Amino acid sequence: MSGVLQPVFSLRSAHDVGVGDFEAFDALFAWMQQASQKLVMVLPLLPTTPGDPSPYSTRSAFGLNPLFIHLGWLPEGVRFTEAEQRAIAEARKSPTVRYDLVFPVKTAALERAFHAFQGAGSSARAQDFEQWCLSQREWLDGYALYSSLSEHFGQKPWWEWPTGLSSREPKALDAARKEHHARIRYHQWLQWVAHEQWQRVRHSAKAHGILICGDEPFIIGQDSADCWCFPRFLRRDARLGVPPDDFSLDGQDWGLPWFDFDALAKDNDAWLRRRAQHAAATYDVRRIDHAIGYFRQYVRDELTPKGRFVPSDEPAQRARGEKNFKLLSDGAGIVAEDLGVIPRFAKDTLAALGLPGYQVMRWSREDGIYRDPRHYPEVSLVTTGTHDTETLRQWWEGTNAWERETACKTWPELNAFLPTPPKEWSFEVHEALLRAALNSQSSLCVLPWQDIFGEAERTNTPGTMGPHNWAYRMKPEVQDLAKEEPLQRAANWLTRLSHEGKRA
Image (cartoon, rainbow, N blue to C red):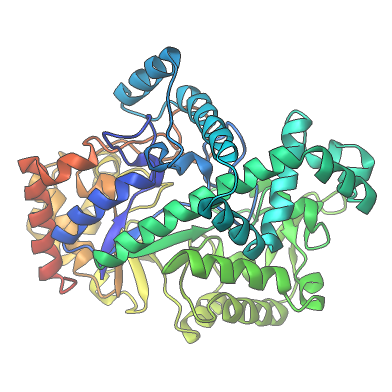
């Protein structure tokens, strides 16, 4: 099977307000069906920090990002002020997402739609809303209260709220629920609307024969509903990161909370099970980010500023990973993101459980030599890049000559470019690289949208901040995928390559 990696914010439609939303999927699915692609991988759809576009800056392990709600699907209807119309026109003309324009316009429009919904009074739609809130109350009540209080206190982190609220004293919580009742309803409504629209996307995907692969971050931010509601499970007394490696002599301090898996176990892993079940119901398949974290976590605190592993010994790490991945994969399809420095025992455990790991072609090497993709493990996912890497074109044009030569020697599809592989990007180079991925032995192949079209604009540059991150947008509108001849040729070309790789 083969498919496409495309973040929702990167979709471009004639009907959006400058950022991709759920409406664009239907036309994308139709093009994918023509291109014989059977899976679309998206980045996390979880609620994010207000004003922060990073899909990994999550404020909840549950729910969906209201930014992706399609305003045109709201029965309440949405009208824009003249100033908003000008902002939308400017945002839609931009080659990248203009979050400075999109966030305020979309927020204002959603608030007006909610007031219209409330004004409609009792109706079948209102009853559906109430029933959905009851069905989701395990996570929704805490999330909606947290979001309302976060707004009320000017986005201050929850540990800076008044003591009664930060420590979740029952009387203080009851009083807050009464005081902020209207705003709590608004945040519940946002999640309901997003859920309704996502189900519409799921139905469309099924009708087109396409699976949706979600992305599940390992941990949630410190300032999040889950850390506030469950501080004994998501602890803030140490900071999560990764140990030193060839790329970082000091390792990385992510400043994130860490999972107390022992405390979770005493609660029969209830929170972790709810999260896994919720994600399994949201996607057909999901990518488990930072898979090694379910075996062992690398944390730093005042006593160990350089960091330590939890648990500290290999047998305990192995046992923890096996237990966690059995729980995560129960009745659901998952792919383990096992990139970076991964001990052999972790890869062996994932293989024994039949869970695919990652093969990023430019990183898949032995003793510095590229591996032949035709010899990758069958139970694996091959890709030409991720949301954090430079695009395939950038890599080819910018890498060392010896790396291009080594790749051409090892990947059969590129043998024809020896003895001196060209640095210049061409259709022939492009096709050979995609064929190398599609012809691999890996059972799953996912190609980033930029790599399919040979683009140089990347999605994210790790270790940097700014408007260049999480702002990539596809060049054509999705409605043009079925109209423009070059886009139709690209679909037919991808179908041919997929048939050659026996994936169509």
